[in-house]
Length: 80
Image (cartoon, rainbow, N blue to C red; front, side, top):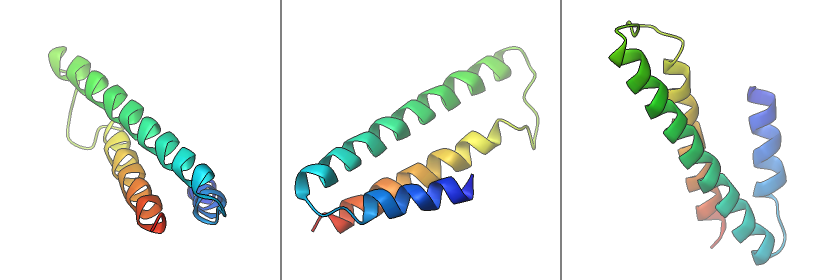
């Protein structure tokens, strides 16, 4: 997982043109929104059926969402 994230940063972080950079930022933001939406839907489902507990594997999606937000910020700062 970490290797895939590093490869993603290398591919999209080292782009040469603004058009490709804008596309990579857009893709990263869309992935971030999708991960956050899935995370919130699953959290609501597990909470409604009283299946959520501290340390639930679902918390991994929170961390993944934060990683994508950080990656989107990193790519945005490379834009300038």
